[in-house]
Image (spheres, rainbow, N blue to C red):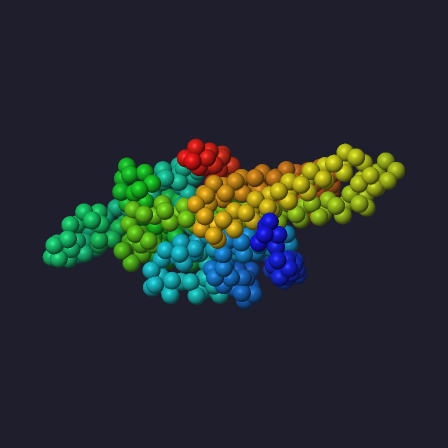
Length: 393
């Protein structure tokens, strides 16, 4: 991808995705209830092969999908992204049995995944999470087995028999409607990021309950409560006490694509503004003839294109496994989400009162565009990551 220019086939694919989003996925989204899981929409993403591609291609393809879908149907984009966020830890670090049991249904859109990291007191500071994973006294036979083989029970924390999850998660994707969750819990107290384990927890596990949250953006987001939910070593994703690495690996992949989501919304707002200012007359001519309007549109276009290039650069760096992925991912997410907020806000201003009407494209985008500046690491967190990476050099 020299100079981060897309190949002709990539551009053609993006155009196809935009058309699919507008013509096939948008009608399904409109039939759904805002803030609730839309299973027919997820199933359509599976039928179109987009969920399969979500797991079989690289970060650049993920960004192109999210940008293109966001341009025509933000709900379809979000459904694709949340499915990937919840299931990627299983695809990348899960056991063969976990992948065989859950991923075929995810790819087909039959099963829905959720990513359960944030908590009421641990949002941006993911290493501070408090969901407890206490040793399960009813599943301690594995420890005796280790003693019989002369192994040190401390090698696995003395918890070979399993754990009981107790606590809360909040602002969780697809909760409480998902079929399973990637859950991050504290297996070693007072160990910071080094004491977290990732678990695959089916939604029907006894003791797990949830509730929907009414958010500004119409996304399926909810809270989960864990009342001594039993998990076993077979439910561990990766290795015990190594879950923070699983979480960060997932976020490093998805942060540039959050930027791509933002770019898609910015481009939709820019396109609407170009059409509006070219035809809307005021003060004796079309709005585009007013220098203040033309300069505003030029600024919107410049920020959108700059964001797009940062996103593509970060995705390419991830696909090449370059060492500066955390920095480039954070930069892409930071700049693109802030740029999209600016572009959508400016578009609303140039459209005037009509853009504030319920059901208008820009009214919808205005509610959608705010969340990505917080999701998957707030703007302030991205700046911290960037500075830390710069000084580490």
